[in-house]
Length: 316
Image (cartoon, rainbow, N blue to C red; front, side):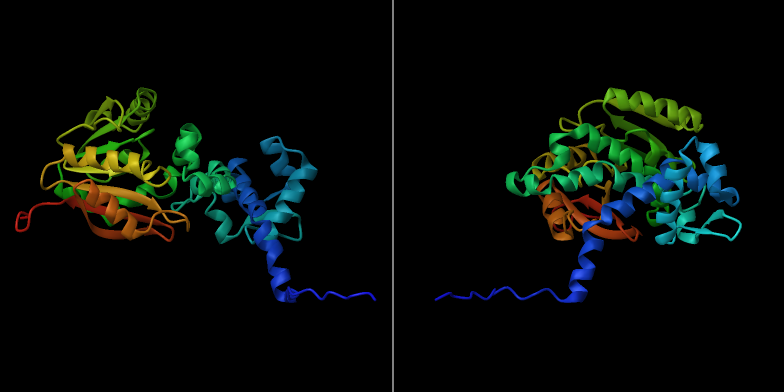
C-alpha cells in the first residue's frame, strides 16, 4: 500500500510570490541609481536632454550597454525618453546630479558601495556580534566620505552654531561637514581631528574652500583622546557602524574634552539596522552625557544632540 504525504506547508499566495522578486533584486535598482550618478549621466542630463548615442560619446560608454541601463532607469522613473530618442531626468533622477541643491548623489554611491558589502556580511555580524566596519575600517571610512555631500550642508539648518565660538570635528575626514558648518556660521572657528592622512586631505580641501584661516588641524587617535576646549563636538563617522565598546570610548573622550556647557552632535543614518534612540541614550549615559534632542535632518538622517550629565541642579 502506498502512502500519500500531503505537505503541511501552505502554498504561497500569488501576491506574495509576486512581491518576492522585487525584494530579492533590490540591489539591481541601487546599483543602477548609483551608476546614474557615478558615470556622470545625471550631471549631463541636468543641463539638457541627450540621446543614448550622445551620452555614450560624452562618457566613453558602450552604446548598447548604456541603452540597457537607461531602459532600467526609465522603468524606475529616474529618466524619461522622448519620441526623438532623447533622454531627460525626471524630478527623482535630477536628485542624482551633483549640482542639484538637494543632491543625493553621495548617498546613492554610499548605498551601492560598501554599505551593500556590509549587508552581505549580515549573517557573520549576527553570528559574531562584530560589524563589517570593525573588521574592515578603511572601506567603511570611504563609504562615509561618499555620502558626505548629500546632507552635511543641512546640519547648520537644524542646529544653531552661532551661540558657539569653536567647533571640533572628531574623525572629520576630508572636512566636508566642518566646511559646511564654518561656511554657514561666520565667526565660528573649527578644529578638524582625524588620522594624519585624512588631516592632510582636509587641509587641502579647507584651503581650496577659503576656510583654512578659520580652521586648525590635529592628528591623532580618537580612541585615545580628542582636542580639548571645543564648545561643540561633531561626530559623523564613528557611531553607526562600530561596536559599542569603541563608540563608548570615543564618546567618553569627547565628554572629557568639553566643558560643562559643551554639546555633542552625532549624525545617525537610519537604515533599519542602526541603534535605537534608547540604545544611543544608554551609550551616551555611560560616557557621562545626556541625550537632549533628536532632530531630523532628512527622511533617513538624524542629528542627536547630547550635553554633559551634571549633578542635579548643576545645569545653568
